[in-house]
Length: 429
Image 1 (cartoon, helix red, strand yellow):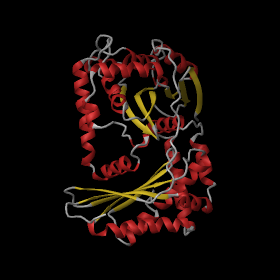
Image 2: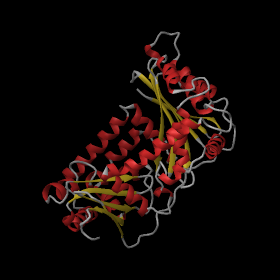
Image 3: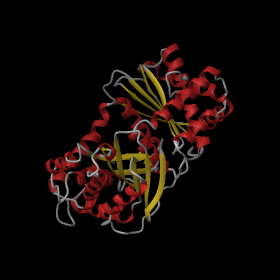
Image 4: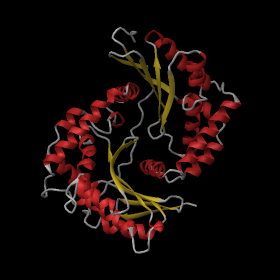
């Protein structure tokens, strides 16, 4: 049994509390929301890592770990996520649920207090961060950015998005770019920190056995030192540009397998349950499952790809296809992927395909409520979409999706961009 309650703690500060005895741990999250922007993405992403290094009471990782160990091995980690055109930065903590402890122990309040300290009491004098922490985390973030290229499949998708959505907020990476990170100064980061504390909307999340009133009191106490500024809503959507001729991009590297990525746009986002369910069903049929058309036909039957799958972003209204191909089969693979999309547009979908996709999507939604991390991520996505539909509402909508509705999603998609990562002697685009 799960009971979710949503409350506004303070202006611009929202609390989502899920009360349940299903888990032995409780999850506590604090997330700041910001519009994705090239000017601020790198600094926003760096802040949680720097803040997590220590507080005035626990000035280093050793003392911080000791404090968390006293909470029966609790964990607090910095997080940076991208939801549509919103950058989500903050902290997620996991702790033993109080229901499994003696009555005199109140882990929830202690955990909230430490999370508040991490946010509001950084090491160093006011106006500056500990320089060694800043330098270390700046280097870590640069290394994470550089490591994109190590996974060629993910790198190809990153390159597709950055070029396909160039000039759009969606094209900004959640970590920023290397040059932007390298240019961050202590003074500049502190100014960004103060701006976030005063103006950024905050999403608080709790999942555990405690009643919402207790969670609310614990978080209010933990954030009592937070400046009371004007927290502006950041939820907004850039319209997808009108349909245009497909654009082609590519890079050459010393790789043995080509990476073909294709980006398709819809005319609008799909965050309302019926629209989201139709998009999820289309994606599962097209390339989002092991029984999909891309997997069964492009990969298995025709052997044109080493892998072929699709991913849908309902908040932006975009579908991405990712595949690994031999250099000399680039055109055949690209054309066959488009042919499978065309079959979806024409409604050439067998009943077994439709029902297999339905079971796949429904099972994914059901497993969401079985994992605290996935459930928190789901509700964060709903917050950044200005929606409050629970997973079971979306599940019911999926159960009602018809073949005609899947067909209409496919008909609304158009090919925007194609990216091909080829070898030094690969095929020309």
